[in-house]
Image (cartoon, rainbow, N blue to C red; front, side, top):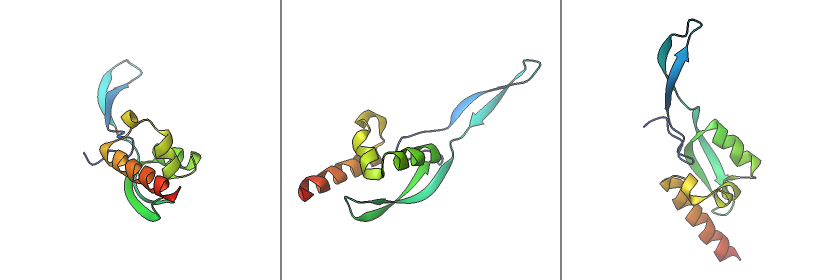
Amino acid sequence: MGSRCEITGKNVMWGNKVSHSNRKTSIRFTPNIQKVTVQSDALKQDLSLKVAVSTLRSIDHNGGIDNFLLKKANKDLTQKALRIKRRVKKALEKKN
């Protein structure tokens, strides 16, 4: 459970390493999980999360954690990310 992205839920995958002689060896593919602190503009606070680097690139591409969560469908997010998304929506509604 340690190598799981707290935003997208990206998890360990299993597969086979196939040699030249076509011999299969079981292998574990782990996502590149990093502990990062991202700043939420709507909440005006820093969020400390364990995130896959691919998710971090997507967050940067979308212009921050707030925009990333608002654009992402609920079914693609974990429970922790959904709680953050609800807090962001509430903060933005209060602001407007």
